[in-house]
Each structure stands twice: as C-alpha cells, then as structure tokens.
Image (tube, rainbow, N blue to C red):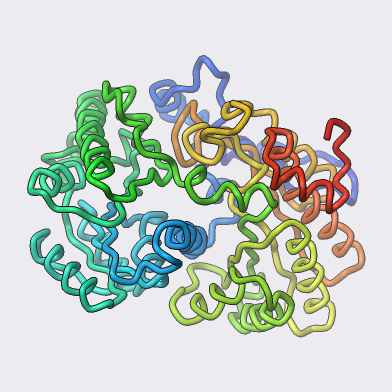
Length: 475
C-alpha cells in the first residue's frame, strides 16, 4: 500500500519480505518548502502535515515524548546539578500533545515546574491525566507556589493559563530568575500552532480564519519577544535550551539576531547518546490488553539490569503514565539492545506469554533517521547539519531489511523547509520469519545513527562502530 500524505493511492505486488505499507508525508520540492506554499497545497487537498509519529502510524500519545523529555531533563540534571533537579525551578510553556510531557518529566527528576499555556483546556487535560499536579489562578500565585515548593524540596508541577509571549518578558522585566527555562509551544507552525500576544484561544481562532496573513505576522512578532526573553534569562544565569520547536528560527527570521544565543537540547544534552545508537524504542500491544505490556515491562527489567534508562523509567512509567489508544510502552535502548529487546518480545509472543503480536517502532527523533539543523542535527562536528541523505538512506535500508512499514516525512517538529525524517516499524509476531526481520531492522536502523555520527567525526560513534563490527569502508 502506498500512502501519499494520508491518501491511499495504490497497492502493488512485491515480495513476502517487503514492507506492507510505504508512506510519504508533506514532502515538497525544496524551493516550495515554505509554510505559505504548504498551506496553499494543503487547502487544495494535495498534501498533509505528517508531523513525526502521527503521520507514520506509530503515535502513542504523550507517553511517546514523556520518556525522551524525562531523559533530556535527567541529562541536564547530570550535567549541571549533580543528577537531580531537587530544589530547582523550571519555567516552560506549552502543554499540548508534546509539551504536556514537561511537567511530569521535571517531577520525575525531582524538580518544580511552572508551566504556562494560553489554552485553559490544555491545562485542564494535563491535570486530568496527572501529568500536571496543580493549577494556580494567576502567574503570581503560580510563581509563589513554585518558590515555596523548591525551598521545601518538593517535586511538583504547577500550571498557569498565560501566554508565554506576554508572561516571559514580564517575568524577566520584574527581575525573576529561574534555574532552567525552555519552551514547547507550537512555534514550528505560526498559523495553526502559536498564539500571538494579546489574544486568547477564541480570538486567535477568529483572527486565524478571517485574516491568516495578519495572524502569522502577529505570531512571529510575538515569537521575537518570547525568544528575546529566553535570551535574557540565559544572560542572567539560567540554564536555557531550545526544545526543538523552532522558536529560535522563527524569531531570527523575524529579525532577532541573537535568537540562537542559547543552544538546542540535542547538542547540549543528547548527542552522546545518539553517537552510541541510543534512542527511542516503543512497542504497542495489538491485543489491546494492558497485561501484555505488563509482561513486556517485567521482561525488559530482567533483561537490562544495568541499563539506567530502563531501570529508572519503566517503574515510573507504570505508576504515572496512562495509555492513550492501544497499550504501549517506550524506553530508550542502545545499539544492540534494540535487537535484543525485539527478540525477547518475539519469544514472549511465540510462547503465548504475550497474547498477540506486538508492533515495534520509534520516534523520528533518533540518531540516524533525521536531518534537522535546528534540532537533532544542530551543530554537527563536521558541519553536516543540513545533509538530508542520511534519513533517506535510513528509510531505504529499513525497506531492504524487512520493516513492516516505513515513512518519509518533511517538516516535523520544526516546520516546513527545516527537516527531513523517517520512521520504521516491525512486527514481533512470534514466528521465525518475524525474528529475522526484527534482527535486521533493529540492528540496521540504529546502526545508521552510529554510522552517521562516526562519519561526522564523533569519537564515541567511531569507537562503537569499531567495537561492534559495523562495516564502514572509510573508517
């Protein structure tokens, strides 16, 4: 089955070992890779924004980003604060499908988070899902509660209905300081995502429909002030990082020369993991039975006793992370570990310990599957930030390796013209054929991440490639 930006266009006969579905979402010829061109083509029904996992059929709800967000804050804590955020206050914005992971991730690392969102419904939703602990009636009340909680060493998250483009400049002007400042508003999409200063969600929807060009202009002007405030917090001593939503890129394009004065999260905290092929490993129980995930959790805890990502994350996820849609789990595993975990799940299905096949996939945010100069490939050692050959090679290799479905996308996370990225899924069905596919896909897929970073000159990746016997002719 070929899927063109959400449209099933044809079914062709191939081979038994070939993928059953191939998807391409949001791809545009480079000179047309702008939001304006995309919106025009989208209005004609010719394309669809695939984001990352959503358009490639492996979105598992907020859990999909919670683990990565937890891992990012854990890496930050390890680098800056002796391994914990206890006593620290994190200021952030955006409580949507991705940003909603932030309060829980900070709490799991022992810190206090003050989380802003202009949409009251999003704050309420995070309260209902227990990702957010409390809501304050005002920014002042939220700030006071955050300071008190940090002084007491509590791990608590506080939500406030506020517009970041208004609140952050006001907090900076008032001399307020925070330990960590970041952001996950939908700045990657200036029309359908970011809400300009001076508007609530109702007024924003009206302006968006009536005067889209004016809306985009106001959104970008607001992003300048939002980003300027984050630069100000960084200069005042806070640990400030961009969380991959292209706020800096939009602000710089709108005239803020210093927008990139603070780093992105990948070069700041995550790249050493990518060099070793470590990244997101997610699996979904096709039975719909949560007990299958419980069995898998137990097996992974036994199989990886020395992996801190597994040992810290899975017990916390069991307690705090609700399933959305089919029961699923995500954890970060390294090169070699992903293939081992795939074989383990396949054996559990074969024995009947897991009652039905399991789909194994990942986020597009991974070590070898994305070219995104403002996020995953920012500040590459050899200057190859924008080289998009790598994700395409990753997709082609996953097709050749026997994945169940493979997707190639454009613009996820950071917006049109800013990224190319791919996803691959494989099925643990308990068969010998499934075992072979799992071994190939779950070895080769993260292997491209090791190769991509080794080729860029990272010593960690080069060492892993040599130690694990990856055949690199130029190494």
